[in-house]
Length: 467
Image (cartoon, rainbow, N blue to C red; front, side, top):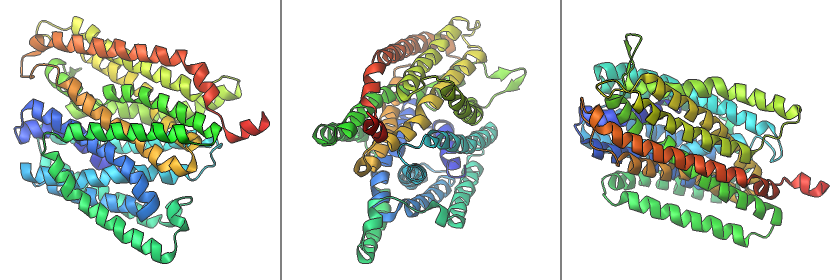
């Protein structure tokens, strides 16, 4: 809960802080938000490798939280220069340590243990309590534009995550990583090298945040990772594990489509909400960041409920598996975006869209997220060969970083927003949302067609023995 607090505040406030306080153009702020997501999620890939082989997952988690504390404190100083340094510290920390949480959790279960899915749903719900608190605080401070106090609040929250990790140090120890097989001398050498890498990444991220070609570089790295995963799949010897890796690659592509739309929430969708949606509900003004809480409430309440529902339905003989959940999530995401053009059609004389349609869109997207995100994490523990578990977990999260860049590209397809310009931009929004919505529904339908094939690929070791 505490580890996600700072990210929630930056995720929901960065575009507004950049435009309203630092007076960045909206296009430049959207591009910065895209790179923010790319680095945060992109470094997850490296975090899986660094934690399992150099620092240990729990050491890297605490080290990453220290960098997040420094980053939020720097941003609270309120200048553009400190924004870039603060983001460099924060993104290095958050980018590397999130994979550690998932790795520490997935190691608590055997590959065939069906409790893993429930554990990740509960974990996901807990993380989203942190998002709820962060979004709520961000909205409250946004109404008075007290950005310095907001980032100090984020600093304190992140520090509490360090305290809790230290108090539960033995409970979060690594159980099954390559680092555990190292000798004492080798462990020390790896630890020192890991610290150097951790600190050295900060100036590198600071530099890349300010380069115009960074987005292309990240996309190229993602392409290399994809080629590497395909190669590892082709040359893998164990046929059962090879089939699982094939299924992983197919599901990863569908995940990219889902997250490319989902990552528009703090970017294009937020600008749409601020400039084209009537945010006065029953006489009460909704702060832009509070809209994100539609998502968190659905996750926090729906996560445990969905976990219990799936257990009950499976006991009754329902066949609810990963391919079905993924295809349903894509269709829900598509319907969420298709709700927005309908709302635009029902806009008032000034072009302002009723808040209900934005609410409906976020609710549909959030249910789709429950079907794909925690299930996706649990899927890695089941399908990934032991030697590839870290890189496949990191790659799964890297997809979200690439999706953030695509979300920035989509957000840049609309005219520059301005006060009172809802009518002039509604048509562009409607076209964009319709194309994205129908395209995502189509991908979901294709995935439904592939369900029988994916089921043949995905096999547990015990099932193979029985057959």
